[in-house]
Every structure is written in C-alpha cells, then in structure tokens.
Length: 436
Image (cartoon, rainbow, N blue to C red; front, side, top):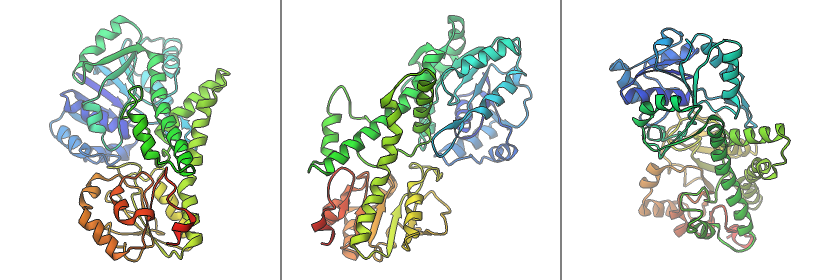
C-alpha cells in the first residue's frame, strides 16, 4: 500500500519508519523544512532506540521519503495524520496548528479518501473535521480514529508488536477497507465508534495518571504510619482485579505531557458538558502536590547537614530518550544551585546540560566528594553495571552518603546505606537518624 503520513515529530517519525518496515511505500510530510532535511539524512527528531537505523534503512530501500510538499497525495491508499499537539507547562494542548494543517490537506484531497487520525486531539475533533469536509469542502471522506499507543523509549516495539489495536470507524464498508492494513500489524483489533476511540485514549492516560497519584497519596500515609508503601504495592498488585502491571509503584509524580494532556482534555470536556467530575479534576492537583516530596526531603537534609556537593543520576523524560522535557532533574538542580550547592549530573543519553550542572561521564566519579546522591534514572544498563561489589566500593568511598532514590529503582543500595537510603513510601528520615 501507499501511505501518506503527515506530522513528523515523535509519533509521525515512528509511524512512517515502521510502516515502511512493514513493506508499505510511505511518504512522510511536514511543513518544517529543517525537520524534513534532517529526516532525509536519517536524523530522527528525538532519540528513540532503533529509529535512526530504521529510517536510514527504508530511505535506502526507497520505501520511505520525506517531503515538505503536498504532491502526489491523492495517489495514496491512506492519509495518516500523526501530529503531536504542543503541550504547555500546565499540560494544556494547543490543537489549532494540527487542526488547521489537517484542514489544509483535506482541501487538496479527492473525494472518498481513507483518512486515519492518530493525532492526540480531544473527543469530537474528527466529527468537526467531517462536518468541515462536508459543509465547507463539499467532500466526504472515510475517517478512522487510531489512538497512538507509543511508549517513549520503546516506540518501535510499541508500534510493530502492540498488545491490540483500537480503531474507531463509521460503517461496515469502512471497516473492510482498513482491515488489510491493520492485520499486517496485529489481528487483535478492538472495533468501536470514532468517539469511543477518542475517549479511550483520554481514559487510558487519565487512568494511568490517576493510578500514579493514588499510590503516591497512599505512600504519604505509609510514611507517617510506619508502613512500607512497597509492601502495599505488592498487596495491590497481587489482587486479581488490579494486576501486576498496574501503575501502582510508589515513587515520583508523573511528568505531565502525555498523561497530563489527556487528563486536561477530560477536565475541559467535563466543564463544557457541565459535569462535576471531582475525581478527574483532582488528579493533576494531587500529582503537582506530590512533586514537592523530593524538595521537602532535601530541605530537611540541608537544614540538618553540611551539604556542598550533590550528584544526580538521570535527567531525561524517560529511559532511552534524549529529551529534557519536564525534567525533574533539571528542576532539582536549579533549585539546589540557587542555594549555593554544586551539582554533578550523569545521564548517558543527554549530550548537554545547563551550565549550573557539572556533567560527568561516569556515574560513580563524584561519589566520594558528594554528600547526597539523587537517583532519578530507571536505567537498566546502569543497573547492570552497578554490581554488589561496585556498590560496596562506593560505600567504602563514602559511608556518609545519603542516597535519595524515590522510585526504589536501585534498592541494592539499601543493603549498605540502610537508613541513609531514602525512597517514597517509608519514613526513613526521622530526626534521630538524619544526624547519624
């Protein structure tokens, strides 16, 4: 099949490369000339394991081409919109650019074209595009909604080997048209109306965000009631009605962006429909409140101890990416530097850090002179390198080090640092221990 993919930031670059890998002839379009030039050179807009090679491979095989011109679009079997709307610091999306860009393209399409929308837009967006096409353009298109389900840092696998595919469609004739395209990816398809598919995306991310906020509120209770939130986590995940993969691991708050965007969509929709959805409305407030956890711990420590140097492991948004979007590590480092403290930073994927962070190439290199180690990374490669003998060596170098690991990602430290190992959900920073 010939597929036209429009909108080439993270979602579109992954979709276009993966569709080409499946044997389709893919034209990727974006109005950003610099982005197009980089893609044609094999440079992805964001680091994603395997993406760069996949792009280069399929450009070489002439299965993939990137352009900033809307030429030959009507020879495509499907037009697939994959814009990532810009989300501001309050997790509110600006959808005007993707909507206007889609409308421009619709005006150039012939009647009855097959259109898939995977852009993260609020429910009702496709209905408005259908109405625009019929009333303004006097055309009728076959619209589908396919909510993207990429995992940043693991997006290639997310696309090529999804657990299932959710598809919204209008009628049986449309369903037949898209089956052959989707079956090449996965035959486990959940069919529903377009509006149901739009809300499904909002609901999934909002539920995940709610789960993170919920367990962190439970963790705050654990810290003040002599309970261990990780024990509670085991209890929750052992419940068959919840399950072991639930987002119920106490730790850092979620960083906004994807989850925050869909929670805000539901808040806006609820307000528009005059619904008093108190639970949905409180998720982001709870998440923002939990972001203070690490700053409160640091404030306690700085007040009690003489702190000069702090080492932070992990600055990227998630593992296996190079984006500093919503980086908690950057926020913490800035907060510390304003208090006159020196910050050393390690992240294998980040090439450049702000000037108030001294970048180090070896995670262990500044342990001896640091008073605090903050672990924000969930880096499996780093974890494999940190054997018991190496942790023991670090302990011998600096027995007084305080290790703050909110997610308990490296709980091997607990064996050596005991009460000096600090994590979300256990009160291990009591007044009598902090001076020990």
